[in-house]
Length: 240
Image 1 (tube, rainbow, N blue to C red):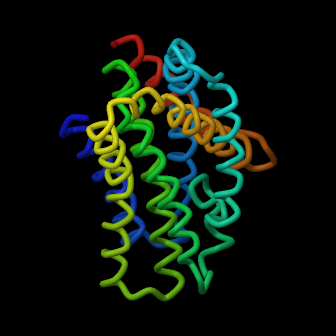
Image 2 (cartoon, rainbow, N blue to C red):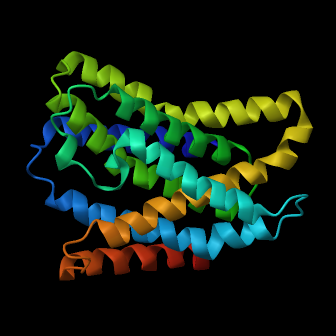
């Protein structure tokens, strides 16, 4: 990956976490709108760009099984992250043991970084893939820092937790690239890691779109956010 990919993978969650440090926890209505936008974007690029590219690869095993595994892996991760990466925030703001949430979210980000670092895609799809990861890390980092702050973690330590979390996707990417450097055969198996992350994406994006709504109905603003997310995803595909 190039420098700019690494930059946005670090800068986007850092920005989300910084907003979590300065925005009052009750002012989260805009977070829901951004979640709707990011969920629509993530689902759209997965359906239009990432899934077709993975299925077009010459693989020894059917990638659909790995997509299914990723979907259910995210369900397991949710048991520890409490679903904060897709908008479940208020029920956990006063959790006195938030470090399980931190570990689960970090694992989630690390796996996404491993998939991004595998260089499985063409350059155009790689751009959309990396941007999709970085985009949904903004609300995830926001929610994580909000919970850590509400749990009584000292502010000076919050910055440390934020930087560590922001480095997780980069760490996963570097590990993949190191493994490929050591053994070129590893690159033949990275498509399966991407398939697992596709399953994760599908779980997160659909949960954001259909669970993080009032009475399972979109407000007008959320509908606008969803439409914008879909249009930007399609536009990025058409431009490439």
